[in-house]
Amino acid sequence: MRTMTNNTYWRKSLYWLRVNFPLENKISVKCKNKLSSDDPNDAGVCIQFDDNSVKIEINKKQCFDLKIDALIHEWAHALTFDSKNIDDHGDDWGKMYSRIYRKFVKWNFGEKTE
Image (cartoon, rainbow, N blue to C red):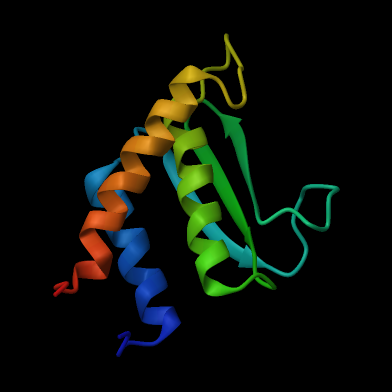
C-alpha cells in the first residue's frame, strides 16, 4: 500500500533513474499539459537537443502509473539515442527498456514487499 504522495514517488523515481541508469548528457524532465509532440494522446516524448542535452516531457494529464511507464520508456530512448543510427524502437532501445523496467519493478519505490 502506498503511503507517500504521487509527487514523492515521482521524485524518488527520477532520483532512482539518475543513480541506476545515469546519462552522459544533461537531462531535464518536465510534466506538461501540452507536449511538443503533435499527438495529444502521447504519454511522453524524448527530445535530443544536441550531443549534450536531452529533454523528456511527460503528459501531466495521464494517471500516475502511465506517467511512470512513459518516463521509463523515454529514459530508454535517452540512453540509446545515437544521432548516426536512429532506430526509434529497435533492439537496443527494447533491451534497455526491459533492463530499466525489470529493475524498477524489483525496486518497488524502495518499499519492502511481503
